[in-house]
Length: 110
Image: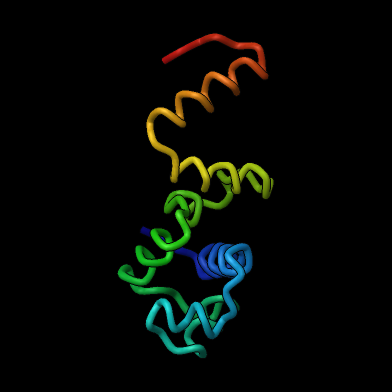
């Protein structure tokens, strides 16, 4: 796995801000020093695998999007929807799928 400091730092900072954590609050929650968190956010350090997993689980991020940001949808609305989808149960996902298909005019089910 090739995690780039800029990819991880950007994802971490954006998720922290969206969740309205201060750097100090997030450092405490992740059980890391504030200076290490700042190093991560400013691309001066890479996370351990354990920290990487903790961050993506805490913020419901896609590991693939963090590792391969060039494949990401850079639209913030898309990213918010994607994170919310991870919190849905199967019934809710079915409703969202049907609604989305109705909105864009497709009825193809997989």
